[in-house]
Length: 253
Image (cartoon, rainbow, N blue to C red; front, side, top):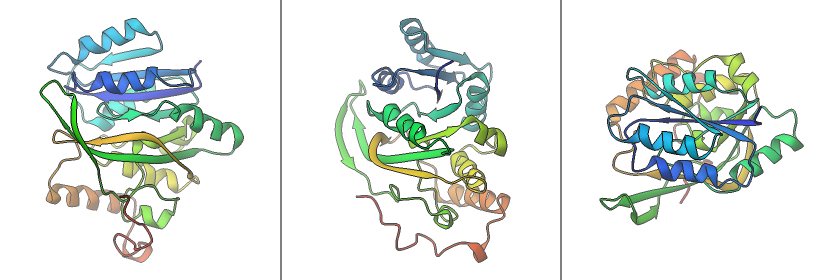
């Protein structure tokens, strides 16, 4: 059994997924398994996944027979995985080569740890027609700060690609909410934060790539609707929340 399972949901990302999977193969830490969940892609994504699975047996894949949102895909991947630790990578982002080694080292040194996250390099990228990067700039985001539970009540400042948590923790709080098509990670972190401490690793170990086709590109009205659902579900009201965008969470530049 591998020490850590990496869950990679994907849909119609034939041009970008290879970069994500190559970053997993490049890890200096090698005791991992990767579960790729293809959400019934309509391009060449499935064929590319099969090529990677043939190249390295640590990569497994599941091809869904109907379209689901990303939360359901993550749940399916987690159920198929076996490792005591669970990590995530979105199909358009990448790990730096020491991500797993540094994070697993933290768990080894801190056996009580149930959840750890690292610093994220946030980039806005532009691709040419062959999806080669032609321009990239640092994006301003509210991330890369030590954990304060009350800040999480206002905004999700933890990127899911920077996280590793124990299997026991997610078994304790339950699956990702399949009703959510975005921000399902925020809902999960809020539930996990009720029962576990979060450890912060102040190293840049992953790269979040924001681009015109990013799933996170939803309009403000939809974001507020989802935000309200999550806050109501987790029973977070103005009495236990800080002022929105607290001043001591500095924007990453």
